[in-house]
Length: 106
Length: 123
Image 1: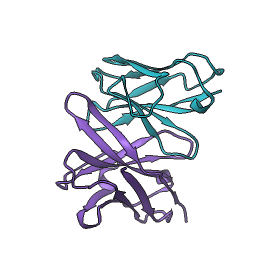
Image 2: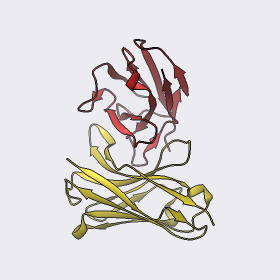
Image 3: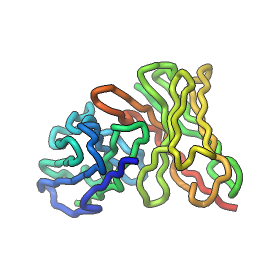
Image 4: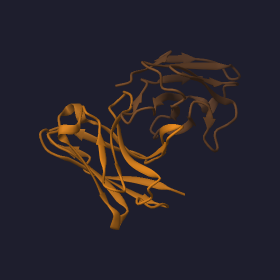
């Protein structure tokens, strides 16, 4: 199995801050890395796929980068509605695996 | 717009079988561009992929659950289902169904999710 490790597990930031979440894979996964946003009581929502492609409707203040084994989700100017848990997921192998999540509080 | 909706038993006794269905609307489950997955999330924990099924009926299961798991397709009703045998408290979770996308160059992801159904395993 490919293990996904996110850091930090949680963070607290202010409106307007730049926030960075890291995700590391246990092996090379090319750019087969996706990000999801999950708010309390809701299902996860696809935010970024293929490491850097924003899903339709996702604000442009979100961006993704990376390849190989190291990836980053950046929120350029944090907004109140961005408070959520963010998960990375590798789609390189059939056995999909997720990171443990990063909780972003504002 | 594609929508997925889970249904099934929300309370299951230990050692019994957990059965859930996912109704697909706004799209066809026979579309060969996609597969159909189940994912679960134990209370206050992260996400675990359970398995998927293709229109052909082919399946792939998480090895950790494979011996207890069956995912099936009902093309006439545009839905797919999950059966998990011999459940224990560790199977207590919110269960989500989702559409899986695969592109050779781009990898795999879940682009549409159901709202989730909480399932508790308890006597």
